[in-house]
Image (cartoon, rainbow, N blue to C red; front, top):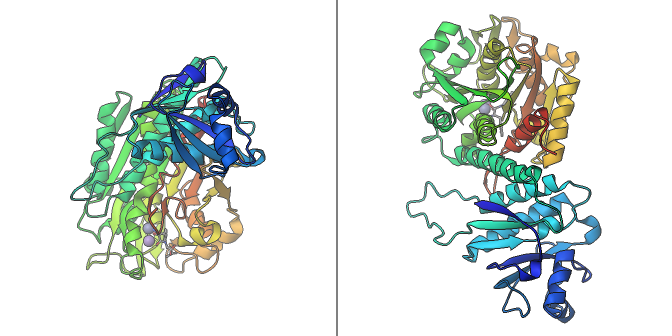
Length: 500
Ligand code: BES
Ligand code: MN
Ligand code: ZN
């Protein structure tokens, strides 16, 4: 969709629909107040009658209001003024976009950006309005035989900013918001696609398409033969159980000075995880199509970098494979040699994410990274620990961990740090190899990160476990969330001294 900054007098603004916010207890936002006055109290009259209370989630479409230049007026309840903040804005913006789109209104103006949201900057308000609106408009119907596309979708949304002057920073807020929304939409769609369509080869093709769209993004795909030559015995042991060949997707975005060290993002691209010989139970196994969401978030973040033309160097690495039971699959007890030379006893073939990631993390070294962040739907234990609200964060560097926490806090795509103490490392002891691929009952998210930490000693590294946040499990909302594309892009924006 297209977004435009709007200033000036709301009451004379010509638009098919003007959106204004109302708090509870009959408290009008400033734009609503101006509209109320120009329309001889049209809004107050409705509040008086009790038809609209301003509760969050409440909306009311009004027609034929005298004294205004708009065709329709959409009242949006914002709840209690004291509690209203950026979270409320995000919710309302998503709701508004959905209503406008469903009402076949082609163009509208929302005055919500002119309403203070806690102490958030106008940049933040605009970025989040755009991201949340796109979130509200997102649909996945690629796999329906008769998709019903909206014939009159919302095309243009004006963002009214009151008496503020338009400036370059605010235009940037909109384009950053659009880039993030597009990146997270891509991650959602790749996640939602089933395992029989979104294979490692398909993921690689999607990455190549991104490369074609931007001259600053170079995409290279390593096949199994190349991986064999590199000694990626851990990664290849997982894909041996599958008829789909593994791919190592390597994306290099060069937006910064040639000499500036890149941020390397490594994403788990397990396009379907049946568990292998240590097969998973049948219930909800379909959701293991989402096991590539870490990889999808890397594609999403690189797409956002390219679209926003960020002045930074970023490398994306996505080891992509399936994990299935087969006569040639890994067996419990098998010992494989990783690219680092370290050997691994595979005690549970369902702990495959760390096997494909460890070789990708070793490969990351050749880019001389400033920092490496890996993103993976790695452990069910993380869902138990943090649920669906926060991604798990583990890191060997406090400054990097804090930057990531802060980026997540800023955009509402939050992470929470867990310890990576040496005390946990001994849970990975093996009698037969350098390490086991599982760490026993306790602290599954931490021992998974401990495993990865053995491959990341030479650089600053953080690990995001997104098992609980990458998709919504059940109900009519079931689907990919696009997380943590927003967190990652905000981290990168901050490194570019942008994003506030
Ligand atoms: N992809 C799963 C993790 C997962 C499970 C994510 C459920 C989201 C929901 C991963 O490959 C896996 O199977 N992990 C095992 C590790 C265990 C065998 C040590 C797990 O979490 O059960
Ligand atoms: Mn698994
Ligand atoms: Zn997995």
